[in-house]
Amino acid sequence: MGFFYKLFGKKEQTEDTGGKVNLSPEQFLATSYIKDIVNRYKKEAVLLLPHAAGKPVSSLRSKFGGIPNYNSFDRHPCCDSCQTPLNFVLQLYKSDFPGHYFPSKKNLFQLFRCPNNNCPEAYAEPFLADHKMFVYYFENNEAANKHFEVPLPGTGEFEPPVPDCILKPELIDDYPVYDDFDNVTDDIERIYGEELAESFMEEFSAMQRTKIGGYPSFTQPSFYPVCACGNEKEFFFQLSSEDTEAGVVNPVPDNWSPHHIMIGDLGNIYFYVCKSCGESSIESYWDCY
Image 1 (cartoon, rainbow, N blue to C red):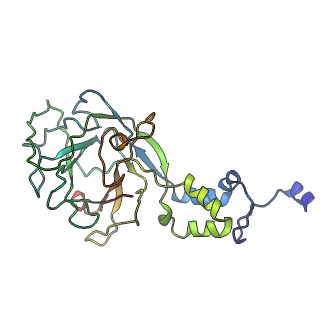
Image 2: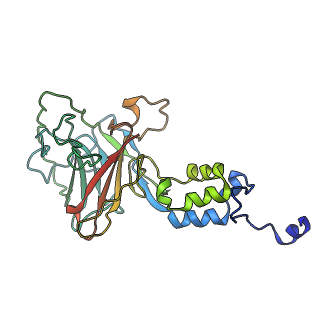
Image 3: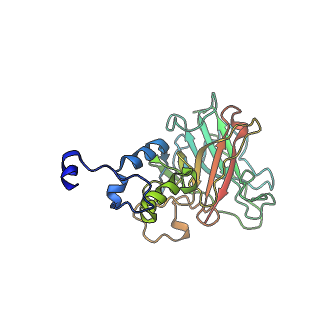
């Protein structure tokens, strides 16, 4: 048999062998069986990778925090439920991120968040975040920015404003969380064994950072909402608590990200849209550890 393998090469072991395939993690990940799965599920995503700016960043730049482009507002926006002035979270220009979802004739995406921890509508339904997050799309006006005094919130517990952060975007390949690989992960464990199945998930899984596109990095069971038109909504953006800057060792709660946004216990907010129905169909959902 050894002489036969020398002549013709050893066939990859991908048959159902009850988890007894004897491969190293490197050999396992290099099999055509795994490469086919990876290519089938791979999606491109853009990590925003915010970095503390240390000084104000122009309202004409894509960024986290600071002063937004106010040119399409008549005043600083407030929460629909508690009337608290909203915290500006981030803005993205289509010229910087053409792969992000932008409705027709809109080229500026802005995200605001109610900072009132006691807002009567905040997370009123389990994990639905629409009454906490406010999404705006505009046609960018590059005139001199309007200036608004941000009203002070009343008494209570409020999240601090988001500090200015520049973005250092990075294009990556992204993959689903365990449950969203359908039956693939069960098959891998059955054929290759538990240890190699864990190696697969360590190598190929949804990235836990703020990102455009790719897959939601759910920490709880997956959630994909259905639009009123009957279509499943498409995931297009994720806001994450875990945007740790390079070089930060043993991050404390305020250092998990330069934007200092904490969603539950190191959680995420996921944004979905039905592109057939447009921006009015956008909804958000959150989970945490």
